[in-house]
Image 1 (tube, rainbow, N blue to C red):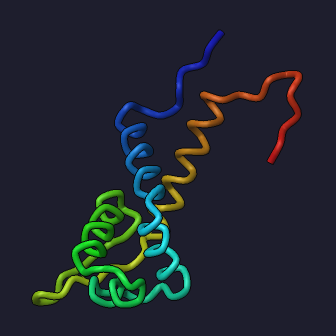
Image 2 (image 1 turned 180 degrees about the horizontal axis):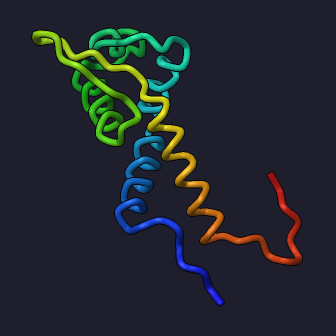
Length: 113
């Protein structure tokens, strides 16, 4: 008998948004900037570091912020972004739980990492 998925449809939407956010090459580059240094960064700093336009940086930072992977604060006209590690790890754990439910091991298949 099939067990019920252990995530809600709302959580599936969040996971879908999370995976979409991670799928963009520019977003991955932005996350690598934060991986090298967890310091706050502005749109202009990210744009300069990656050699991309300010609007491209802003659009991608916003997408990452909407999923909760990044957080932000405004100081005057400047917006500062930084990684939200706990949210990212929570979403990874939710994805793992979902995959364990929807993709169980087959009895004849060995577990491959």
